Image (tube, rainbow, N blue to C red):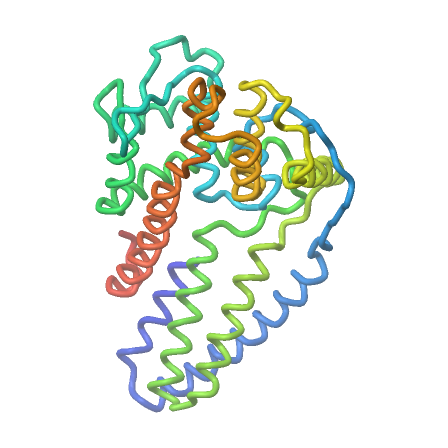
Length: 336
């Protein structure tokens, strides 16, 4: 149905000028009515912002960090991918070793993967088969592939994300999952086509601007439209309380053991408290402390070794999605 609508929009180009103008105005009116209706519908269903000043010293549960990211942010984003890698480290399935001053290697520990989920098994294949050298992969190489082979990286990333999405939605965190990337892409492309048609065919610049602004607003609204189930909302509040503990400069993190600190560092990353956590950790300890010498994960997080990787993965996803829009337009809606 989506392809039929987009194909119909693209076919307008070959019609005579009077017909172009009439059809463009017709599509614009339909688009406007649908968009306003959808915005009203989303705002009515939108979950109210949740805040708490309570402090919780311990994590609410020991769930996978990637699942917690999904619960916390309502997104299946690049942080889900990186936190899943860290989860493999915490499980002992892979290790991170320092290769030299500027690079680290992920190593496949070749242990039984019976306790790994399907998405984790697929993630290991991506790291060590698709990108790495069977049993090792440098962070620099992973970062390079995300940056310079964005199309290839995005394809394997998207394939992995479909598997993870299936597992994550089984937790039933949300009463209504927001539209997928494909739906968002369809809406964005069709809106931009209508805006361009108005600009060139009807000469209504103001209408093109309205379509662009309203489309941008709707995309932001949709991004926060999923509503947490009651049980998930309670768990989310508990994670907010734990977040308050992590950012409290007077907390007792200096009394925690290495394993606990590694777990807390991972949770800090997925609930967007990474910056504060590393600053507090660096202040309570120093990088010459024995605790950092005994934990590669903590030292890499405090030294921000994952920062470049995170940036390139995020950019790779954005570049690949933009390219898919351009290619879709060039091929006039044909499936690639």
